[in-house]
Amino acid sequence: MKKSKVVLYNILLFIILFPIFDIIASNFFLKIDDTACHKIERYYYELKKNCVGNYKFKPSFPSVKVYTDEYGLRTGREKINKGTDNNALIFGDSMTYGVGLKYEDTVVGILDKKISNYNFYNFAMSSYSPTVHLYKLQQAIIKNLYPKKVILLLDLSDIYDEGARWYNNDSSKPQLKSDFLFQQSLKKQKFTHKNLQVSRFITSVINSNLRVLRNRIKNLDTSGDNNPEVKTSIQGSYTYKDIKSMNTTYWNNEIFNLGVKKVRKKISDISNLANNNNSEFYLVIYPWGETLALGQKSFNWENFANEICITEKCNLVNTFPDFRDKKRNDKFWYSNLYFIGDEHLNKKGNQFLARILENEIFERN
Image (tube, rainbow, N blue to C red; front, side, top):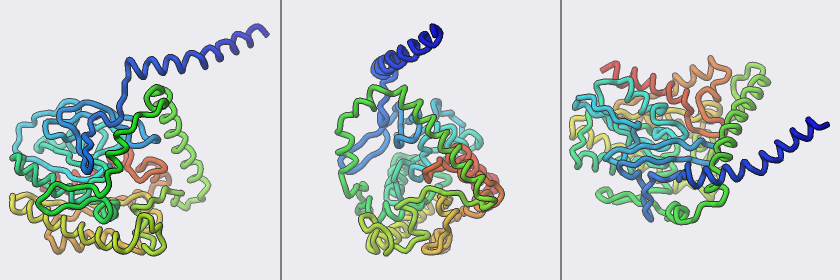
């Protein structure tokens, strides 16, 4: 009886003292600002130059340390001078940026470490799309950062982002159509967000592992189906759903058609700019989990990218076949490639994609 009282006392003491410890640690030792390296203007955003901070993509993702260089690009803790004039400029969105991962575990970070005769520059950021990629490439060249290779990882979300998110005149700085992100940045952090960093980190790790475990248990019940329940999205569902059947708050024919038109136009401009600067231009496409599971019966992303590269004479790197092979041969393909409940590639997924790009873009040259 006395022993159980001691145990109960210790549990109560822990419950009382842990929140106090968490608040002290969060305010005096951790002081984590999840967008510390984000420079958010009213209708535009990018990364700050020479910054060290943290970034948490969303509550279910871990907060990761972010380092940026003199150009305001994500890099490793120490940028290695490789003593080469060969520059690979990489463009993409949150997938290419590598949300939820250390730089070294992202597709660009992996290539940066393995390929010794190229300097890698990662221009990617969340929800960037070809309009921003073109502008960033133009600015890089103006700053005398000349590319040997221009590599654009085209994302399924780019159709929506081009149709509903970004606009500009070709010679101007891209602008967001809404200042929502700016207004959000002005709001004060919630008490729990600011003061319970340790608890939030522990909860994030537990939830992440539980999602993987639940997914694997469900997968064992599919009796060899190899097609687990995957997260579906607003931005990527147009590949297997008719636009007319989708949520009109986000999608309609005007947004979709404008998005398709702008993606084609901006990639054409990027291709021409790369060609004018004697650069090799590669267009890379990759599937989301929902694309692998539900197909492309409404809009074939592979055909779309292939048609663009035939017209614009770009080098298409289609990773869909490799991902389909992975799906066929790995019962746990979803949890081994993607963050569960999300479309982004996890650490293993980035390693998988990096191996393909290393072979298709660098080893064959």
